[in-house]
Length: 452
Ligand code: PNW
Image (cartoon, rainbow, N blue to C red):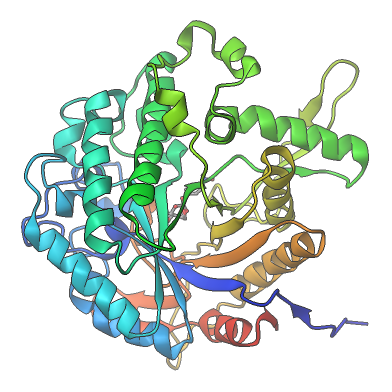
């Protein structure tokens, strides 16, 4: 028999949706905005599906009032968005672009006017190309520029913005942008040492952003990182497989979570990287290891792990060809990933408040029929992940909120506009927004604070 027990979430649980500036704003060269690495990268033939660019995207730059009105209509109370660094500093550093500040002032005011609390990500992958030309994430020039940028935006918006996310998914703009075989901007091919240096620099930026929020954020300001850790799932929920999954999780995320939570690179990490380890300057680790208020996690999928044999601590299982997946090649459907993904950082690093800053799924074929998209696949995906999130909370994991990726279909990086992640459909010819079935379902979940 199907259980009808209401799966309620804790009082004051934060429900929201997420987007990022480069994926929705468009107006890529308007009002003095500088070029970003993704503006450049998307123009290299073969890098983005169908040669799609970020030039127009969802035209959110001009349509944000209507978009906020739609959010309000759907009962959305929390909105995670990002700021475009090249809009504020077209050259990465130097002169600030007043039109960029003005735009985000208007955007935040409009968001608040619609009764929606903004959760602002300071950096979501759109590095100013001018900084890339001076070394990008391989150089400390970028770290210094970021420190100024973070201070500028916290000073400008901190009277109204109280929830700050420093950086989104460090490995996606460092490892996946600078390693051989990588598929993200700027698409460089660097040595292991240089790649390790890029995420050390990103960690420093995180530290600078924390410092900026502490110094200029005003009363009630909170700050944390959003990480896409590598998430493990024990094949069986037995002590041996759980211990194996935990060991794998620690190894895989050592380069980011260890310095953030302990203020050092672990001995195991230093041994593993050897001569390729990042060069660390005096004061770096203190900056990186400053206490934060929460940990943001983008959880989509995971890696099945079981206990190894003999001295081998764990074994990674390859997925069978028929394992359920979305149209996104990397997105295997694995609801338990959200349970273990939230639980391990609480257990291992003592994370006190965890927000799922992204979870969702992408598909290519989602036709609008009679003014609706019947995306039962997405509704079921989210529902199944929420059940596992509910289980984590019931087991004492301090999960405080959940943001669905994404509010609307948008520029899905190297997959362009083909892959749709929204709960609101976007017709890119007309810019018409159509809430999908999943949006209406999610409205009820948020309103009733339970899985329906
Ligand atoms: C996230 N993976 O990226 C990003 O934060 C979003 O901007 C993006 O649109 C969304 O997820 C959907 O892709 C990820 O390979 C990209 O595991 C790749 C992975 C995870 C997250």
